[in-house]
Image (tube, rainbow, N blue to C red; front, side, top):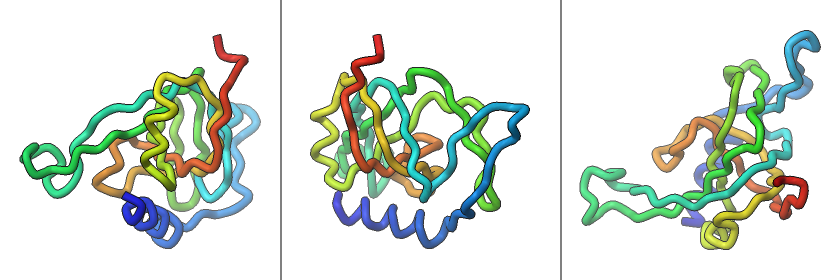
Length: 144
């Protein structure tokens, strides 16, 4: 799993370069930015089972069994368009990518503030449209 995280990071950093200084129109709404910029999102974390390589559910006897952490946002947010990636107008959920995938289960059912970089889905193990490479997680006492 650790090598999958590294591969995903390499793909996101080398194949999907980012342009600095992109901002959204002040008339529309404030929006977050794609990686490598660091953003902070709030919401509920849940861990969900999914099938991985080689068949991603086609042959459940041989496919890897994955536990993925998903962050359901406390309120929808938007992502600005940049030169390489489209904007997202109403983001409600992101898939969390940890350096050490085993720690994901510690946060199941937790309301948290998650900091990290956002990337579009690029790999077979990316189940959500937006993936966050997690830098840090803090419990959020402000969420009801």
